[in-house]
Image (cartoon, rainbow over all chains, first blue to last red):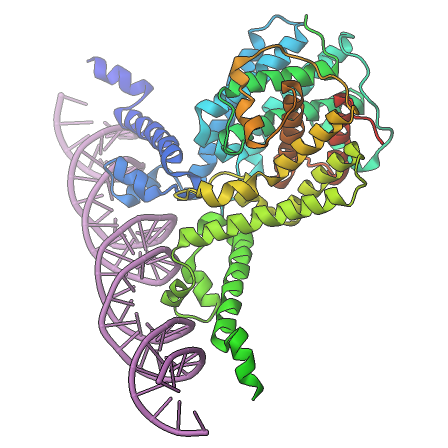
Length: 238
Length: 238
DNA sequence: TGTACATCAGTGAACGCGCGTTCACTGATGTAC
DNA sequence: TGTACATCAGTGAACGCGCGTTCACTGATGTAC
């Protein structure tokens, strides 16, 4: 009787539960895309599941919990994409690694505008992402940029950056602590420039704020801009 | 009988109307700040006005119309701030003009996070800003940056930028048309870098996305970053 | 100056809608003996 | 292998809430003669 053997691993009930769990996440992503995060509704998801509205509470404690699941899911997915792109480049190809990482960031955002909005758009009213679940996946990308830059510095493949002296207000110490960096302030400064430019360009494109005449090809513009930043930073091609 | 003379200019009824109009805008700004754009509610505003909910329709045709009023109001206020800062600098002080303009942009955003969110955050679900009312005030800031850069070029105060050859995809022609610019593509490229960095840094700060350890002083970080971009662009101090 | 009419700000009730969340319940699935 | 009990996914009704928008109305304000 083969059924009983399967039951020992995962019982049919448990399988159904896992399937429904996954469907809820999928529907959440869909609703995010179609109606936006602030309109995310457990009742609407129940409807799509052909369930009565109260049944969803067997799977998810509250609307806020579902939002948190979606946030973590999106951060992780984005970070996976960026990491994958990064790793496809030979080690020591620092400029190339940074370039493809930023490109992957933009590409994910353009492909998944709703999820990008959840992460980098305005906060969802009435919802506060719990830092303990959200911070780790949310900092993976910027951590990767910092790490790569540090490696480039160690390898002597990047020159001095413009120095701005001792500026107590800028306070890079906590950042260096958080990411276990051993690197000069000037390079943290440089990393933030790269990060801010990446997020800035991506948001302008995804949120449609390039004025009434959006660039015909966002990817080309992005590549030019990021390439320009890497040039000005003094990171030569391999 | 002095009352009759005043009536010829503005009748008491008209004055009351103007006052209520203004209060609706003010309450709209307040609610934006407190509850976010997607929660903006005509009923709630009526309550604060001590009016029955249907009465607001004497002043505003719909919720969407109020949103549009608030968008235009915010764009104009922001652009006024930036323009004022710009004009306080002596002509020909191009670097300084760009610097204070960007700083004014950030300062307005930090002071008015809710209104900044309305303009540069994620779109309000179910609401589409009407381009005919929104485009002009919405492009004033970027137009000012472009104009200043063009003047710097004309005055020979800025060197060549890295050139990226003929890149059909980037399509700067419509931008140059829209802003009546006579300028090389490389400088448009440079202007967009400045613009994207400004918006990127500002959004990261206002939306709290600098990771778990936000910089202690956003203004200092911002000044460093923008100063760095202006350096790398080759725009020397006056 | 006084009267007759027009305008229009504000009322109150109603329509139809959606939401999150709780709770006592049924009945199928799973488990221990 | 069969029975007795425990678990738990899904039900259906309800609570209390908020929203945008319409509509016929009252009564004060404004205007023309």
